[in-house]
Image 1 (spheres, rainbow, N blue to C red):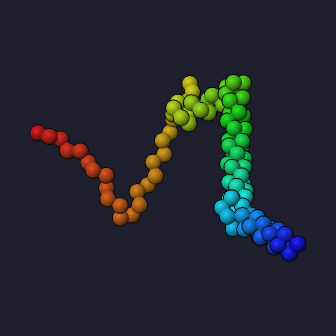
Image 2 (cartoon, helix red, strand yellow; image 1 turned 135 degrees about the vertical axis):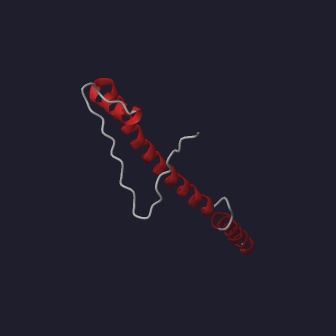
Image 3 (cartoon, rainbow, N blue to C red; image 1 turned 120 degrees about the horizontal axis):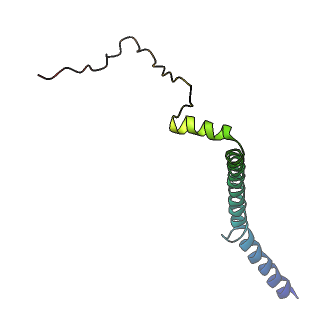
Length: 105
């Protein structure tokens, strides 16, 4: 009877070793939990991006305002009867003057 108890104790210790120390036990579970958390965070970001893109598509399909905004910002277009003004920032003190062209003779 003592050898049976000893054999069961050895089996229990070996199983505990596999659970706590080996790479396929608790360590792997923790790594998988971290991987799942990282994937869920990435999924949340992509879901938000998809929501924004879907809203932009809806705006482009339904209204001219979104089309005008896109044409102005991306293509630099202006509407009829509008005047375009370009504001150039002043040069900082001590900044070199822009190069001037000289006529070749």
